[in-house]
Image (cartoon, rainbow, N blue to C red; front, top):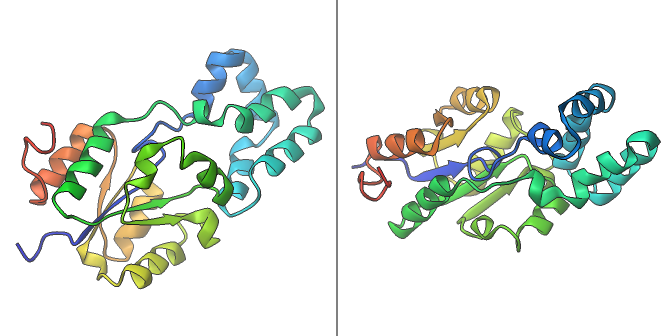
Length: 209
């Protein structure tokens, strides 16, 4: 069908692997201490800087030195980062691979640090299973800035309406939709699988449904 998407674009955090740092810290230091830590230290703001291209370990260790009484906990963001970004969402990884097996181009569009992505590549095999990777830390701009979507369009050369994009965050989805992309707000791999079937890209069996 000519109106099928020409490429499928996956966010990574909370789509292909879990990204819930609070849950990690709840497990490791307990909910009360985690609440105190996150109230005092803007760890998500720190991570945004990494996603914009700042150094990975150096940025985190620098923040740790600003809050000596939280030094060990802040350093965990780097030292135990793979745990922080776990577990994998196997159903989504299976969809990524099913699409590629059918010859559908699959891209990543992720807010991810340049250096944290490099460290993750050999440790998360599914990060290698993309035809194109759009990483905010390399591009110097993060979602939902309209510029990042424009850069994807210009690089891949496909019209916006031919791109199907899934992301767990409503603001990221809205920004893509404003450019004319087809979008799916990710809540579960099964919901995403059903959308890929509805778009004619996979059969129910191929989608694991």
